[in-house]
Length: 502
Image (cartoon, rainbow, N blue to C red; front, side):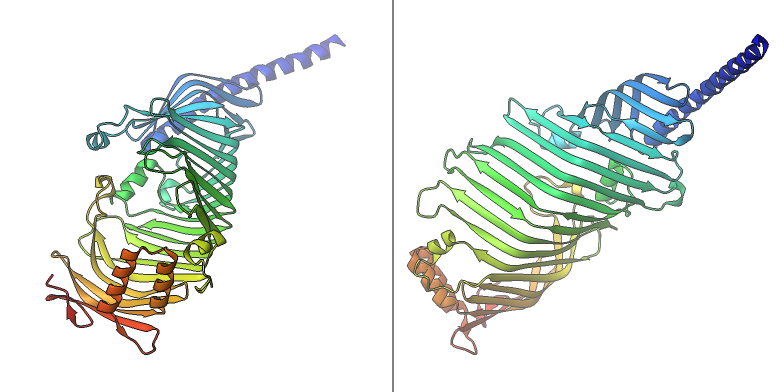
């Protein structure tokens, strides 16, 4: 009886020893994969160093325990510091790597030498602290081959503060999830991206120029992002912005209800108050390809409310806009030739609350129907500077070639305004050549009502009346005024009346 047991026990011992040998051999493969992952990151400009790493998980898995990890991006301008990290792969699914992020880690951002030259007052570095709850990154596939990267977290929290400057910032992503489908790098195919967050919550505190305490806070619900990108690192994003890469990305972004609020305590010449904006649902298509930026989006059920402790009868009010629609296309990389641009804005059903109406129309004589505004313009322009060369506060670095003003239509307070025309800008002398037609309806009685209510001060009222009398002619109806604005090499004229040489 003992002999079979001894034989069976010996077999188990041999198997255990053999399994241990195989597991240890596999551990070396895990170390090799870690080195391969680090090498793959190095190829896209990310350096990773690990002070100490150990591999456990015997007998059915491999589990990496790493400490004091430093991740450096952008030639050392962005440095992540993680106190620890664990990564696990199962023996029966070695292609799948599960990384658990630490509960806390930090990011140091070092301003570039160019930024320091422009802003000598910049600190040596900016520090951001991260806090996570159940944050995990799952990678399926090996570097260079087709792979999937999935990130999930119950909460991502980013916090930054400067006690001396009395500023702070916090941003939280709740119920965050993202997925990136990466094809083999050799194919040059785009990465497919999806991401979502049940809630984005943010708050920033600081001081205005007059010393008033300010708080900016908000929430965005049900954020969804999907798209494709040929960019795989922040350095590649910077290269695209500076025109070194034509490849870019396309994103589709949707969100549910969102609200933001700015509060100020007042101080100096500014009163205390708040400004609140809200919206129902929003969608946006964002594309950056071949040196062109394109944005198409709309927002529904928006509102903007101001409350103020300023002296005087007006203490604030609320404006509602049923639909805001935007199309925005322009070049962002310098080119020798002009590129197309377009700006199209539509604001539909703009309404004001009783606080505003009582201030501008106490006699209730104005038309209170919802207002409308449409701007539709297109043409050609070119950027004259790289994005990295733009100095804060300088005018936009663009030269315009031509402009077609398809429409500016405004309906407000019972008055209407329509503008159409075409313009060519002769470069490099920046000389405009073209003409615009302006058509106004029912403007004079509206101005008289605004003057009587005190919204327009007497001096402003006088200037407006003089401008109308001087630069408009009667139209086809008694309520209509028209103007033809012409720009030539000889100068500017309105309705044939010269306003001087260029």
